[in-house]
Length: 335
Image 1 (cartoon, rainbow, N blue to C red):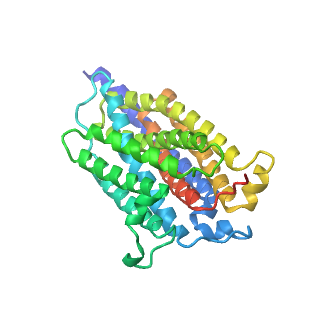
Image 2 (image 1 turned 180 degrees about the vertical axis):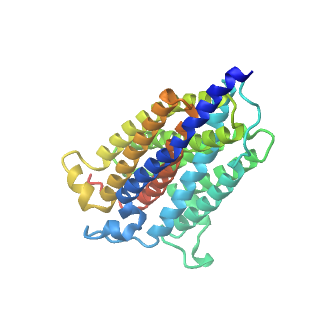
Image 3 (image 1 turned 90 degrees about the vertical axis):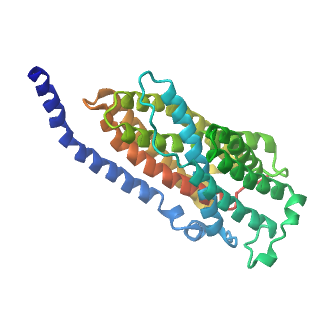
């Protein structure tokens, strides 16, 4: 019995090195915050010097779209991690409390806010009398906005029912509606753009929400042996999601900003500036993910990978906020 205690003590002796890992994580997050300074200050700095006018309510719309993206990420990530955990032999059956119902409720509020903007002709309503609810049924954007509202309502009902896994279907409908909304019929090959956005938004939601819930599960399981295995399984899935995100993001950018003008537009347009900040953030997130994967494989304590993973979650939250702002800015399309 006493012969196995020294290794245990040796293991504990290595753990004081974790604060230094925390310090490095903070340093990386500071660098990412600097890279995202322009979009985080709102649309006005991004528009400064571009000659583009700020549309009314851009900040509010960006906030609503950020909430909508986050509301998609939380339940989809939980569904993904539940599926991964079931594939692990010996995994504890208990799970942390689901946040899906709260996320769906927040998404419903955000979708209602965005629908009210569409109902007033894409203007911020000054009062309830300005909102033409019946007009939503008469336009493509209005019908898509209503689909998002109904999708989150159905997702909330499923999340509070005995079969919460059914919420994947209304959430998928919301993603499809948002992908179609982002590419109007007047755009060149709108279905291609919608397909790219569909894959991009799905992968982003699974990556952000999956990592958040995986860390919550690890904290809930504490010292269970299945914890590192779950984190490693998620890391493999995340690598595929990152590859798909990179490919679809690059293709979407090239469609909206022609290759011969992309460098100029990255600095001379509000959309390009925020897109550049998003690229910087995603690159930093990828570096944190790689760091976590290395520690998971090589560190004496595999769960030390949770430190860069927590930094990755925070950084991904900033990416979601920047993405919300990006969708509210004028797109520099030249057809």
